Image (cartoon, rainbow, N blue to C red; front, side, top):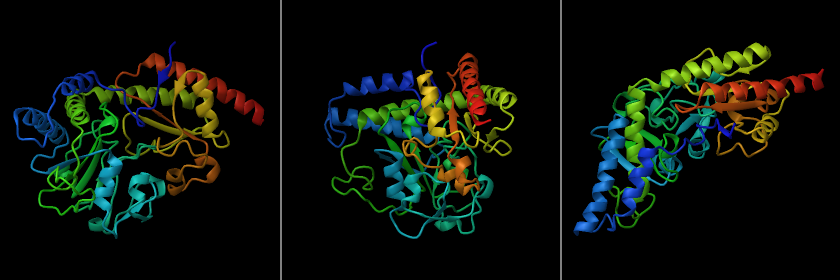
Length: 346
């Protein structure tokens, strides 16, 4: 079997629709800020994609600002001081908001929504939050395209998205804000993106984002992720049958349909990632932005797990093209290494 990719929460494979849209956009010459025919053609690509992403995100009537990434979108949204969050948030959120909120078990208790940023779903555990009304901002990166989401009814004033999590290109994201919301520009210059994010737009990346968002919404409407959930659950059953001491994080609460985060305390996550990589499987030990760092997951520690357990976790995240055969092959390989670990530990 060729290599098996099981790290969709880090980045999803590029969708053919996004590839086609990007290739077509490469042949459009003009600068989207130019008023001539060529410039208007480039601007048309951007506005078509803006409408595609807005429709998929349930953001009709809201302002959508294209950025270089969800990280930049978070910085644009949270640059003003005084926001709070829980310590399960992505680094791009906790870099701006103070992680003071309790999240024992993975669910966050929000007392003051108006100055809080709360993710919809966690990239490591997959745990889904209940968003309160009048929330300052939500990180919708992992939820978008996997579960039903509409900005207009989610209760938040701002939301961030990332193209490459839904099969679009890397290096393009977006900030959605309610119409009329004040968002001071961090990049000043030509006044692009409604004056909130200056700089010539990434027309090619934006085109890919729009096409990916449209395709992602089509898949969601068709129930594709229900099958993903069934495959994930069957995979976890295989793991549990062979390893009764396994801890599956978030198993008893609402989770993303594609995410399985689990640990055998004492068997280091980084070791498992390397063992599985050598066997031909791509998985992770946490968020892709921090999984290269050798330390226990701060997400799991914030949920109340000890350092040993938090350092032993791995994440398997799958998608619509992941097959049952691939998951079975991974489970068989992981179980073989698990038995070796238990034999040595005995």
